[in-house]
Image (cartoon, rainbow, N blue to C red; front, side, top):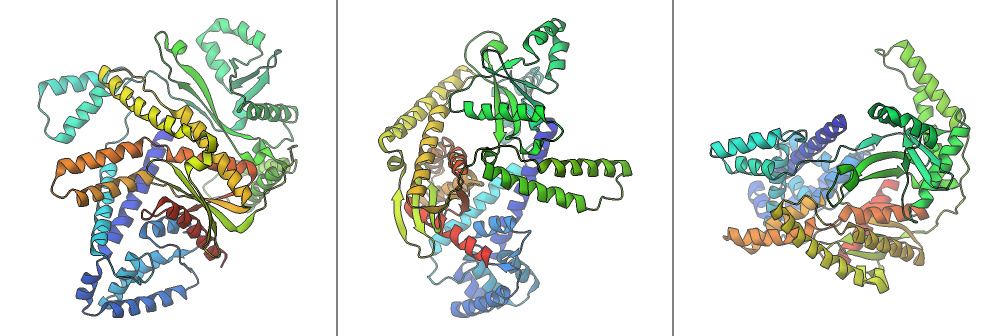
Length: 571
């Protein structure tokens, strides 16, 4: 768990550093039209004419792919397609750094500022200044995250708390940052729940059934731990056939666990030939879920099992698709050259495992057949998400750009639209209760996650019905990567614009919108749509959601950008 945590943290730091360098690089290059005219000593028409020449030269290169209409989208999609082609924005930066011609540099700056395109409208100086300020705030936030302290283990014994308390009572802090650090350590509630246990393989989870029909589960290696903790438990294992945990779930989850059980029984019956890579279950996490009340921790808290599985393996067609992917990967591994520093014994074992994988994958397990969904690829359903976490859907014809219909969250929910108001009221009540609990030092914090998940699933189901009604080929969801950071920098820049000179008013403005942002579960809502679409075999694409425009226009833009991206990729 420690290794997993540090690897994740280092990966995040690497991504933050890469994003910081990209944003700073863009900020150092772009300038307003007035600054470009003054710097080049020419007219805007001449700069645009040179920009057209630069675009023509770069588009003639076979590796160039025009990808976006904003600097953020260019960066994100350029990273995703780096293995296939060099992005146009990357080439523009390379040409900018290698050329000494002032006019060419100004032309490239004009292109980078306008999303790799030539602007046909007059530049709004206020909007450009706001855009630059927003980018500066994004850079400041990333710099703060990168310079944050290293990860530390949890204070299980309370030593760090006592040490910080002694320091804080004996000396005065040297800075505001140090005061906040002391305050964070003193107000942190001690963790009483152990770390979760990760099971990265489906064969590490053992499934069974009692005589009464209840599904039971055990885990590879857990019996030895339990026997070591209590020697008298050996007799219990003889009676309960090595399955120490009984499974409790709702009716919606039960079919999935029955599938895991059936797969496990088929695997145990044919361990020599059954392909473990085609088991529906992928991995699982055994973790404690914090509960309410007084008493021993193992009575108050509850054990929860979180399972990850590939929905494609629920059907025969999806299983065949996964089998072909794994066969192709195993075939590539068979032809790969082994590094010289590896021992001959290691090479031999690797080849044996790979050969066994190839032979097992030829045996397809039985799955229920389901006719794959077939829609019109020219029709897309674009989704946009606003600050209030409300989904807007637009059914768009990608070829003509015509919007066939719009849907909002209330219309998607239909007769159950009242759940939105109930969720909003519950969020407000829970926010007030959490504030009271923090004052009293109560560790438990109320949440409306169950109601939120229910609303998300209802909306996802309605979106699938909308797709089927219009025979849409795919659903396009917005790219939510770093969404909160981008919204936060946008709000700070907007506060400085609306409340110039008043720091208190700016803080109040930012606080109000931050509460709205951090109360929402953007990823959970999109994941509900993804999971429901996978069950029906509907393709899910990703598009760019702009900040400007109404929610309906944003949903339309999400679909249009995905369609253009798909068209460019096929060319």
